[in-house]
Amino acid sequence: MTSERQAQVDLEAIRHNVRRISEIVSPAQLMAVVKADGYGHGMVPVAKAAVEAGASWIGVARVSEALTLRSAGVEVPLLAWLHTPHTDFAAAVEAGIDLGVSGWELDHIVAAARECQRPARVHLKIDTGLGRNGSPVELWDSLVGEALEYQDEGLLRVVGLFSHLAVADEPQRDETDLQLERFREAVALAEDAGVDAEVRHLANTPAIFSRPDTHFDLVRAGVGIYGLSPFQGQTSEELGLRPAMTLKTFVAHCKRVPAGQGVSYGLNYRTPQPSTLALIPLGYGDGVPRVATGGPVRIADQVYSVVGRIAMDQMVVDLGAQLPTGETLLGEEAVLFGAAENGDPSVDLWAAAAGTINYEVVTRIAPSVQRVYLNETPPEQSSQQGAE
Image (cartoon, rainbow, N blue to C red; front, side):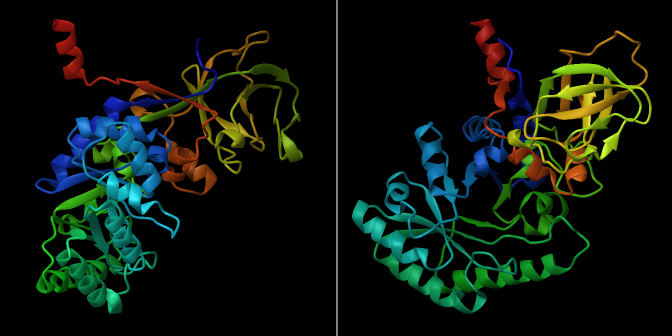
């Protein structure tokens, strides 16, 4: 039975993007970031596809996400970096999950290591300018020293040193140079103190493409593995990436209306001429931004714009006067965004209509929209299975 509302996720597009990014950053390794349920694409299927394509690490924000991935059979190194005092550090240590440390977490992690009688794997994080988590520069020396003392006691292993960039998506800004300088200084201090880290990592998706001097041993690719561009004015295609998600439904109603017909709450739009309106059964309850009036919808190989306010579970497009009387598009496929190669509108157009970024548009698509996975088996495996 065909789902009425689908977010189709092409896992071969995920694999393609992982391979593309891996080529760019080689010999650095790639961490595929699958937090927020894989940016709305599905955390477990995306993680498995990324590993199949060569990602050697997986990154998430929360320990609960990492535990889900471990339970699903993801065996590569997993890093979780966003914690609270209620985080289940013992479960993380037991499952061999790497833990980001900004300062206060260290004692909690050491207590968990003692409880599990197993050394924890930690990555020390320095705040180089983003101002979120990460150790302040003035406390870095003491954090490194404390971590090394615990390492000498066999309670942990300092596996990594890392930070996060604030404006790498705006390559013309000089703050990235300052952050890189601070990171190099922090790494040098840690190494002089005796840290022998497996990986140093700083680069996010925009830095992967614009700042090869930030790649170090490992890069963290988030939005890029989903085929989306982090840059204003530069498309996915120009970066060699393939958007993985297509959001689609079917026209739920189609009717002729006179000139001056108001549309949706507030009647902010009125038809300028006798026209045909099509009802699209997706709305802000499904994660489509309420403010995104003007967002594109492809119906029958033509792209129309949403008119009037987007409601909780529906929106309207004005098909214009070109449909002959009696003709209807009821039941036709309606695609909000997808891949350019299929003639679909870009998610970037929806982001522009909503005054936000493409990351948010895909991430907020609600569980009420069924995820349908394409190309779950890599092509090479499919051909091998067919030959057996």
